[in-house]
Amino acid sequence: MNSVSSVANASLRRISAVGRKEFLHVLRDPRSLALGILMPLIMLFLFGYALTLDVDRVPLAVWDQSGTSQSRELISRFEGSRYFSLRSHALSYADLERAVDRREALIALVIPPDFANRLETGDSPSLQVILDGSDPSTATIAQGYAEAIILTWSRQIVIQQLQRNYTKQTVIVRSEAVGEAGGEEGATQAYRAARRGGPDEANERIRPDMASPQLEIRPRVWFNTDLVSRNFIFPGLIPVIMMIVAALLTSLSMAREWETGTMEQIVTMPVRKWELIIGKLAPYFCIGVVDLLLSVGVGYFVFSVPLKGSLLLLSALSLLFLVGALAVGMLISIIAKSQLLASQLALLVTVLPAFLLSGFIFPLENMPAPIQAVSHIVVARYFVNILRGIYLKDVGLGVLWPQALFLLGFALLILGISVRRFKKKLG
Image (tube, rainbow, N blue to C red; front, side):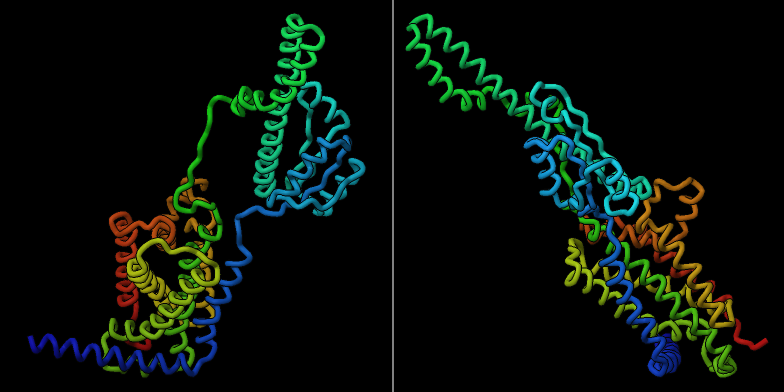
């Protein structure tokens, strides 16, 4: 027992010695500190503020050929919505074309001259909505918002017309009935009574569901109830940043030793290969922990991203992911003996898969089957699912254990390959 503890203590001393050496180098190199601390903060604020999937204040142009109270009321509905921003009132179709060509408007509304007349007669007037298809995502979402505003307004118009028609018919029927019984004076009194009570009675008789389909949909949103895209994006942003920064930091570690000519000292150190690699990773692991704390803090205090799940589980699985990301950089550093080549390989291995194949922004379900198959080996994919589950759904290890198991296996596998690939010789 004593021999085992003495061996463990000796290993810890050797790992600590390597770690202190690497830590001093990081402190003497401001570029490493800037890369490890400032770069994640810059990326957090840049993506946090600039990247959004919400479509608000879409620039709108209107050509109102009707010029009536009904058309102005419809336009006011668009102005009162947070989804649209009225930029111009066009006087011709050419004005609309110029507005769309110059991107002064992404959506245009054309109200025909007979708009009010057709509403009064009960006909269905046609409205033209012009969309800028050069931005298909925004155009599709804006079309849905515009249709919702128009349908809601038209439904209210139908209800008002039904109420007016019911009141008018009630007045005529009551006037005729009482007029026959009480003459002209009785008819006049009945007419006035019907006019006083007509709208109230009409409101009771004419219900909103008479102007809408009988099938009613009652949506209920779970987890991200306000559908704020930032709450979806930010938990996915943390794995991407951690993967890129961690791999970049450690990818320069061994390559720097080769370029500066200090690899001979590393080889002659009385340490085992795995002790050397763990000692090399230790300072960057500490930097990664600081980055994790900064990321969670910025998300909560600056961007108001709620954390519904366990902070302890989040921390434990984040540290597991961090070990795997650091191991990827170390493996690259062992293979590439040039800092330039190592940094390029690190960017290639981390940036593209983390952004495109992790589900961070683009749904994996919409990708071709071969690409979906490749995404299963991207470790960021599993950590994105973990963070969104903890942040938004408050799920625990009982649900996330497959992803956690993959993180553990990935970290052990890459560390094992790194130890095996590293040769303590100069040849």
